[in-house]
Image 1 (cartoon, one colour):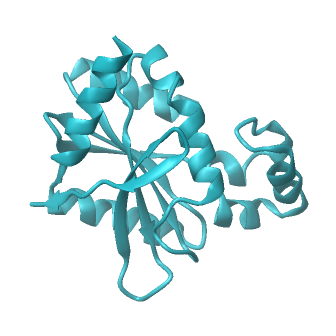
Image 2: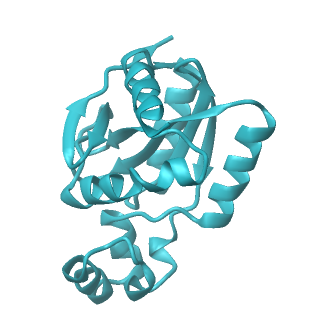
Length: 181
């Protein structure tokens, strides 16, 4: 079963289509939360995104010691920062928002396609932490009945946003091209 999920995801990433209005909404979300990172999910069917879910970034609201997805060095670094500074360099999705999105996907026959977040001050490429978390979640997605998603990053470090999507598997990153329609 796991092999089937991976094959479906490879196909999904290769054929990913994001409507212009959803891309515009993601960029608006990133700009609204800057200088903090935004995060969210894109869902749809057959590789075509049809819904965006803006998810609250709780890093700004909780102490880093409570955020288990970070290694001890990153958690120690985050703990020294103010909540506002933490949210500029990291994100953790609010689980209530995530659960609400997952339920809506299920109720509407949609599949998770993409996890997105912004890099307000950095390029649109996965950080070491992004890669670690995506790799850790490879085993979790199937357990919560969701396909393994592509990862989309929105960089705001220049006047024009840079949006790129990636496939992260076993710690390896490769481009996941998408089409905007």
